[in-house]
Image (cartoon, rainbow, N blue to C red; front, side, top):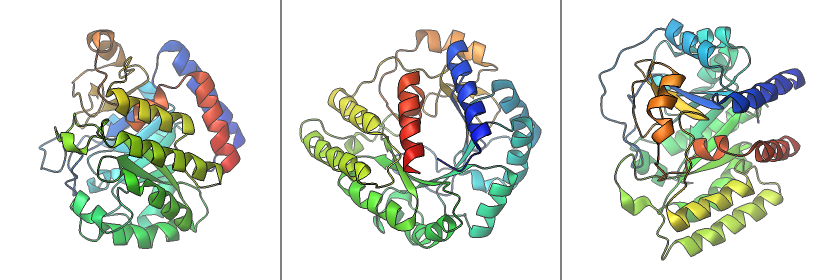
Length: 327
């Protein structure tokens, strides 16, 4: 968890309680572009997308309307937007309270940009990392991306803001490496969060954990991660969520998706969509709820945004207190 004042934490908690009570979002992902400089195996973006370049005022208006607890600024690769600082500045002006998380593959990130992002209102940085070595470069198709992350992240962590989280997508080829990634997080002075791969984006099923052969190995890895977490390793994903990950892979199903209620995205056209997988062009949350959420039966993913947003209020409080005590 990034450094936040006690007063702001209390106001954020109050907003979370209110949003849950009235059916408003915990997290909204503001996907300011679908274009990306990477071409990751687990993602459907990477090719050029013709899209509008909506100005900061549109993004500011959307966050003022929705008032999420967490505003994720993502893509694609948000750093491709030359006006990204202006967008975040306007969003922060319209909503001083929400936790702003910038999601990036780090290729375009520098220490200077990091400091500028903090100045305009970013609270936390989510840095993608899928392997603890150069295999990450091939997976993301980004030249020397791992080397850049390895050199940059410890320098950013040295500022002492506790605002960097490594984001790792768990799939069949990298799950054995998760403890080593957790070790790197501790060595670099940052946290790590794990999210489940879904084939819905790309149709690549071989990256899904095989319940007949690999699931038992993943159980051993999860047990190791939970022990590491208890020993002080900076693993942000709770033991509860890690075990739910196993449940999902055992059944390849997680019912009662709350897309449209607890979370959704704003796409580069300024429209609402249920998630990054199911695209849509809705003008309001009420329309999204009526035309999608009421009849949604999709149960084929359990990504980090679902895992974090669909917890019970009790579980949210327990996990939040755990993180606060650790930090």
